Length: 429
Image 1 (tube, rainbow, N blue to C red):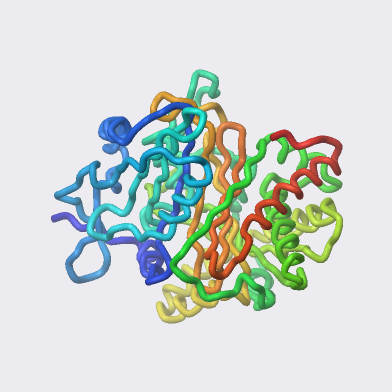
Image 2 (tube, one colour):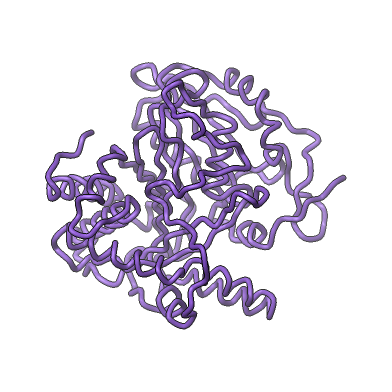
C-alpha cells in the first residue's frame, strides 16, 4: 500500500479538529434546474480521476498521518439526496452539515443534493476537509469537477488543477515578490497582542448557523476605484465586514474598538505541485470607531497597502519555516500564539472563482457561496468567494455564542449600499 505523508501544515490542520471544532470547509452551489444525486454521481464518475485525493483516505494504521487509496471507495457513500426544501430549510440544512463531522473512515468529503428548491432550482452542498484543500485548491477542484465555462467566458481563463491565474484576481491579497526587510516591524504588526476581548472570544460548541450576503462584483470594484484613496475589492470586503460587526456590537451595547481581522494570503505558485494548504496571512485593524463609511474604507486600504509594501505575508511564512528548522516545539508554540484572540478577532478569507458564466450539470450557476469553520475562541468566521460576476459573503458561527447572526449580515449589506451611495451610485441586487 502506497502511503503519502501529509505535509506538516496539513497534519497540523487535521489535529485542530476536536469534539466541537469541525475540520471541513463548505461550498454551497445553487443552479437553475432540477438535478438529483444519481446525475451528480454520473457526472463525477467521469471527472474524479483529475482529483485522485478525493479517492484516498487517512491511513488507519499507526505512524504519522498519511493518505492511502481507499479500496472501498464508492460515490454512493459520498453523494446523497436530501429531497426538496424551501430556502429557509436549505439554509438550516447547510448549518446542520457544517456542524456534522466528516467520516474519517473514508475520503474526507461529501456532497448533498437538495432538489427541488423553489423556482425549480437545485442546491449542492459540498463539504471538504481543510487538510485536503485550502481555499485556492478547493476552487481548482471545483473547476475540475463541477464548473463548466459557457461560451461567454474569455478563452484561456479556465485553469486546470495544477494552474492558477498568472495575475492576482481582483479581491485577493497577492503574495509578494521579495522578502520584507524589517522582521521586527512585521512581527509587531502581525503577531502583537493588540486585539481586545470581544463577544466573539467565546468557547465554541458543536452547533452552527450560517448566513449569506450577495452583491455584484463589479460594484465592489467601482467602489474601490472611486474611493478617495484607491482601494481593492478585498479592502471593500474587509470594510463591509467591519461595518457588519459594528452594527452587531452596537445592538449589544458593546464598544466597537480593538477588533482585528486575520486575512489569509495564498502563496500557491504556478511551478509548485498541488498542495492542500499553502498560505500565510496579514492582520488588519478594523477602524470601527470611524463613523463615516468612506473613512473606514480608506483606513483599511492604507493598512493593507502598508502590509503589502512590507511584504508581511511572505516574511511571516519565512519566519515560521525558519523557526521549524530551529525547533519544532518553538514553531508549534508560535503558531498557537498566532491563533490567540489577542492577536486577531476573526478570520476573513477571500478566494476568486471563475469570472464568466458557468454551468453545473448542464444548468446555469446561479449562486456560489463558501463557508469556513470557526475556531477555538473565535466564534465567527467569514469566507468570501467570487464567481460569474457575483461576490458572496458566507458567515458561519456558533449560535450559542453569537446571537442574531443576521444583524452582522444585514450590516454588511447596508455598508455596501452606503459605500455605493457615497461614491455616486446605487448597489444593484
